[in-house]
Image 1: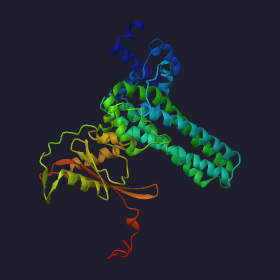
Image 2: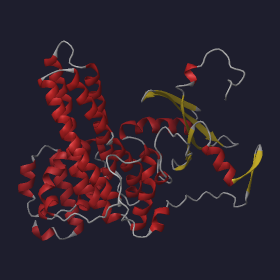
Image 3: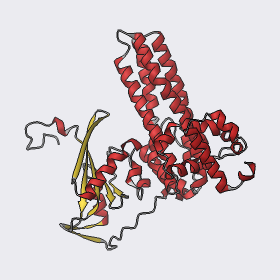
Image 4: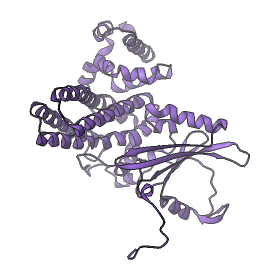
Length: 412
């Protein structure tokens, strides 16, 4: 086989065959034995492109996710031997890595707190474990920045399947946090043995998933991103990061070397809008600046998806409920949702196009808030589908209102 491995096309086909054999039941050791020569110098970008090609050929993303750790096990020796891309304090990758190091220490601290609680149940031990879990859950901002800023830029370079797989694993971690939080909220009760068994059952796979994701980011995601993205794109990512925020660390200021890069934002999608200062609307005349100001002061969040399923606009209101960043402009809306819920989004869009419905509504409870989410179809004068409007509103206060109020309270 050695005569083929330097041919890039042939090499990729062999790598895909390797992964398919894993999915068909071969063990890691069997595959390593058969493909030993090839596995000596496989790089992060090559792995990502190979997984992307398999997804494009019909291998489900859920199947890639299921055996994601097995893939890494096959390539681990080659990945470990490769030099990591250099980054500087302030660069997004430097920040991501620093957060991973801090999250690893918190994961150790949570493990110690849980061990102490299971060994000697008590109020102090329970509060310690709850506190450590609260701190660890701040790491969710790390995932949000990847999903809403980094992944959209990678998708522009054809890196779509692997990012979807990683997002699905992020959701598994979030589910693990939620399950562990529920256990700690209830406490050991009258059956500490059953409580301990359940804690182990939840925490061990959660801890493994987080640590394996550290490795995947360090050895696959970040090297691939450094290879694919330009300095200008990294500057745009850096400029958008504060909108979502950081966990545990404050980014350095040594990067970007050119301060002007901090102002870079993604290019707007061509819209064909009038260039005049005044916009002649159905019920008034406004400047573009006034329209923007109006939308940013709405008591609801709105997102507009055009007839081709492309995100064209979102309102950046003062207290936005779900995170958004300029990186999603021009992104397919299906890529803006967790893999587990994409089928629901697609069903709504299909129903709107087919005229089977004009709206869809959902409501959830999140962080003590009652959130109301509605989707509305947008059609032109001939009734043809032109896009979808998403409206999200915090109804927590509104649901408490009773009776009437016709005047302002004194002092308002």
